[in-house]
Amino acid sequence: MGGMRSPDVGTAFVDGVGQEGRGPLRRTAPISVPGVRIVSLLPSATEILFAVGAGDDVVGVTFECDFPPEARSRRIVSNTALPEGMSPREIDAMVRSRMAAGEDLYTLDEGALRDIDPDLVLTQDLCAVCAVDIDEVDKALEHLGCAAEVITLDPMTLEDVLLSIETVGRATAHPESAASLLASLRHRTEQVVLTVASRDRPRMAVLEWTDPPFSSGHWVPDMVTAAGAIPVLGASGERSREIEWADIADSRPAVIVVAPCGYRLDGATKLAEDLVRSGVLPPGIPVWAVDADAAFVRPGPRVVEGIETLASIAHPDVVSGPPGLSMQIRGAGVGSV
Image (tube, rainbow, N blue to C red; front, side, top):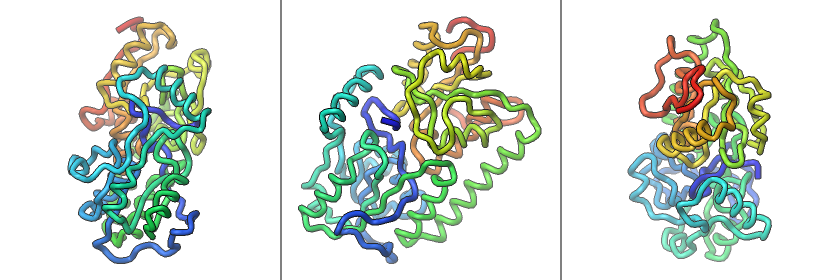
């Protein structure tokens, strides 16, 4: 499937900068006046919208849009078709089964869309595992006779993630605030890069799913590189992929980071502890859990916090990461939690 999975199966893992229209209802010119009705079908897009100053115009979001907290007050227009409380293995099996059968993983509330009658819809066009399929969005808008502009966000690299902020700023008539935010994020990233530039770079393995194991992908290897480490699983701009446990040992990591898509720090911590207890990870290697949803798998402004977090793991004596985003599960030479 090449994307990330979550307990709710949807973390907008793949949402970036593509802007070409596909459907008959799409306009080619971005909206250039404020005060429009915006629907976000991606948690990361929701974060960007609020960050650039367009939050007041956001009227519809997904069930996963929880940052900033104000987003929870908007009408939910997209939900998951999968039950809650499933294990990573159960989620993986059900996702594969539904996709093989051509069944949707999400439901789109056409009644809510009809009531909202949006002017702008932000979605993605890379991964059916990560959000409502764009064809379903097209069909729903056409059925409702809604002439909303649809912008697809599909980043593959860290640079794509940053540029998507610029894209959303232009589309919502907030180019200045988007430019200011982008400049701030670039400055923070550059500060990390400069701080660790002369230091040895540890080999870092990032797991984006735990059962079965998946390597990191898309922009996450770029985050590892910016943090002053060497990404040994996955490559920049490539999709996350299923691997074998032996692949982790073969990659000779100096540190392992568990960043399972759709999990906050408490859930990632439990999964990382389970992995250490099971003995599937190479012995004696430090293991960390991170808040994947907050700063890793949602391609929005907080990925820079993810870079700072990884730098604090790789270079703890010179970089202090943001609080509450990481937890060490096993230290060097320790055989179990």
